[in-house]
Image (cartoon, rainbow, N blue to C red; front, side, top):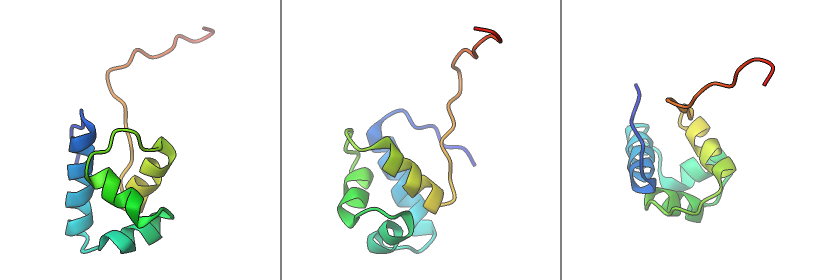
Length: 78
């Protein structure tokens, strides 16, 4: 399933919803992703200044991935 994310708050809501569907607590998700509980709290709250590397770790721990659509693709040889 694909979810449109266009704000940090929308990302936080998506992460919280997935975590709850998987019956994970914030500490359990933090442990699975290798991040601190505070990071999970901030991510779910929509904090806009979090490290992308750690966001990706959380998404992967939830079984998700980040996809970017709509960008022009580079031409070969460019």
